[in-house]
Length: 269
Image (tube, rainbow, N blue to C red):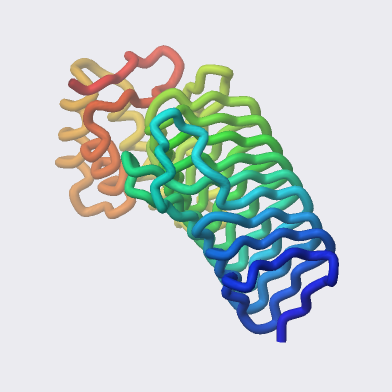
């Protein structure tokens, strides 16, 4: 049975699962779905066509499912889907999608979104991500699984951050950031592999050596990045991790790519 504080305002149209807790002064709109075991601690605002997965905990002053902050939004019936076992801390904002971005903003499972972080319209955020305080991602951004975003970091709209990446605090991501790497600087530069994160997740020394070799091939030597991508694909054809980087870069054709200091800035045409 749901436990709803008498000061909360829960619309009769909302779908409330078993063992949901809705604390003091929360507001839950008519098209909201709260799955089993969700907890809204207090003063949480959930509106729009928003679904929140099982056991996710939302702390005070979060606003979820609010309309996109986009001049192109015309009131279309877009959605926000948040996964299971997330922790959404104070002041977090997440917007629904737009017609120009697939109509849905999606957040995966087991994410931690610290105070005042923001997920914009049409973003696709993977599983097991961590956003530290005041992280901001613009519209249409893709954040893959196991990404860590340091405090105050920001991602420009339409950019992709690859799996197992680590973004330093106050870093601005202006292009696609390949998987398995770290970036830092007000205008992001790659700073090598996210070795600590990879080891924590069970990547072997051999796997990390292969990724290092591919990294060196991609960002040193003559020729355009597109040429080096194909050279890496040939040299590491049997390595699933490296081929994940290759696929990431092939799919991102037309978007800029974050590179190391001293490397040629890469933008595929």
